[in-house]
Image 1 (cartoon, helix red, strand yellow):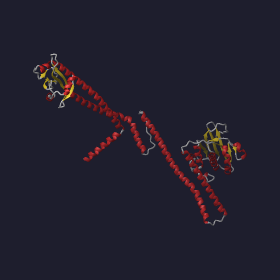
Image 2 (cartoon, rainbow, N blue to C red):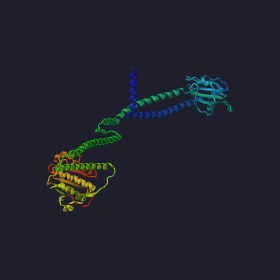
Image 3 (spheres, rainbow, N blue to C red):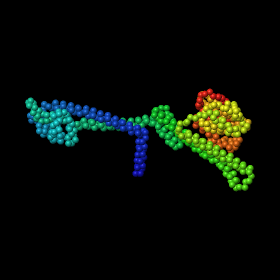
Image 4 (spheres, rainbow, N blue to C red):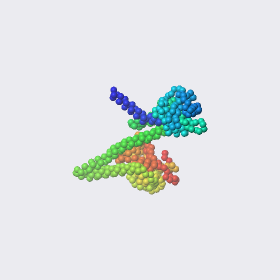
Length: 521
């Protein structure tokens, strides 16, 4: 039984502890504080007003009693006329105590009516110095005797009427404050009871009234708990009839949740890309390493005297080594671009022209072209004497080495997927807004399912379509895409199976000079 009581007490304590920390609890506590402060101020004002009103009435009663008994005081005190025990002119409950000139108590005259307090203590004490001072002030004052009985007193001297103004003694007209204090106590009790009743009713009304305005906050809290549990796709609902602050809070939190979800998706995608990158890089590195290791083991065994076999092994190891070098250089290029992007420094402005790059690029491409035709804006540039006239003076926001790498990767890709006697074109265009350069071929084309992934690292689609099987690493187009994006450009591809592919790169126009332009079809 005791344990049940303890458990119940703990539950009640925890409930009120949690309630006190809740928003409604905090608002109600502040409401109570304001109400209590308000009631204290108003109650104090009302109490002082009622007290002053009651005491002013008592003062008027004392002055009235003094004027009604003033003519009889000289007879009673100066002529030794026997005073009455009760005097009809006094208000009910009032009294007049007489003292001699040397402050000795003489007698007391009561009014008719019920006496609410014991006057024996009052009449037995001498007229002390304080009372004497009050007699000189001639103003009513409040006096408390040894039994804590309170009186309103008016001290008046009893003077002879023979123009000698001899003080025969003192008369203290008094009225007990029993009824006035009782009225004040009852008014305080009534006020406190009414204040508590108002506070209780207002608490229920305010708590009920706060339910609807605070409901969006409760829903926000519930949704936040679900989001904390992993539901990052949830968003806070919008309420039409709610406060402006809550609307701002909903917008800010939804914006924050969108950014957080995007960041989480980016992180997840980055992890997936990193995992795929590691797997693809491992695969790409393992193939040439395996090939080189195999030939080295053969050569290490000795006994290979056939010069043709030796030359073939050396040639194969050289090819695989060059492949490793190209793969390493591509990875280093991607890493350099990533570091440049993440450095946080403002991007530098570069510029170069096609005329600075293509003459250096052709000696590398000619051995790879074979019977294919390479054009620039319909001009065939296989013949060196026509090269200067065919190349447009087009400015791009790239380093010369970057433009050279972009063109080499795109042209190398086009050569791999274009059959003999095919045509590869470099098409340029410039207007006021953007400068474009496109590499077009009439080769095999790219399947639609591969187009969304064409610029991903190590993606090569169907390797069986490549004429140089195993030679590509799948990083060329990824490097092109990163270079174009970092320099503020855009790249896209249009392709159709059996017709060919067109890679289009566009940058904001660097210069406004009149340049040769060809509209892309």
